[in-house]
Image (cartoon, rainbow, N blue to C red):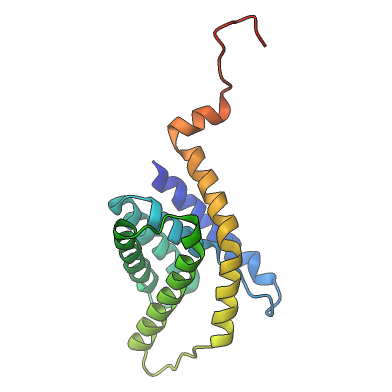
Length: 178
């Protein structure tokens, strides 16, 4: 079942993102490969499997972030349903649409997170720093295509028909032929 594999991949990316990528200097920013996985799974998985996976990954993100419990699962589920609905109506599976789709999804998810956090704690004013968000968006645009290629290779290894071809060599009818 690919949901379990994607869950462990998401947890791995989240651990790498919150431990190793935070040592980068502030002027570079911190890449967000976890969010690219969120968009990838929203486009690839079926409705029930994808919603369950993003609910679980949102709960794990809540554990790592320490903000209000439930904000990330709700945001990721809303993002999943929007992207899943768009994938049925529009041709967003194309390579050309990946970067704008991830960037628009990132801005949508951040605006939802900001709105939920200000609604739940109106006494705490949360700053919205455009410089940081634009830097994060630029960095996300740079890592989208390589991460999609990694996730597609991972998806190829998960599918049973394609993974057998990956490890087995073709058999010839003539056994004496090399």
